[in-house]
Length: 180
Ligand code: XMP
Image (cartoon, rainbow, N blue to C red; front, side, top):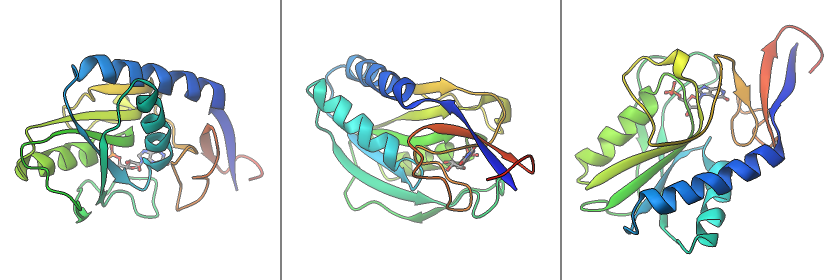
């Protein structure tokens, strides 16, 4: 049995997403950009971020990529692969790649390289959560919400074998120490 313990509250998420939208609005320097979300974990964060960006006067286009990651496991396979692609041309565009978490960062690095190989002019990265202790590649996201310890987290879009994605807060998933 697994237990789910709240780690980042709805209110903390709301405040931090607003702050990140400020950072992005300032940092992207008024440049036009397209958001590319990595499915499926980014969707809740991305939806809140888009609305926060709108409050800053920004309304970027949005597209999505699917990149293979952990499957049903909580361990990275060590290789990332783009499984389904963009619906729009990215040649010459500035991209803000949005994902739920940078863990090993293999996914984000691979997705960023993929966008650049398609001709994107720049590909900045934004994650809700950063777990630097688990890095397997030298990668620092341009924007991040919270830096977290090496624990497995779920909620606010993040899942464990497709469960817990709908939780409105981020929680630590602990295997084998209590009722679910
Ligand atoms: P990395 O950075 O290792 O992450 O390539 C790939 C994808 O794995 C998922 N991931 C997690 N999902 N809790 C989750 O629910 C976690 O602690 C966690 N760590 C990684 C996530 O979808 C990420 O995009």
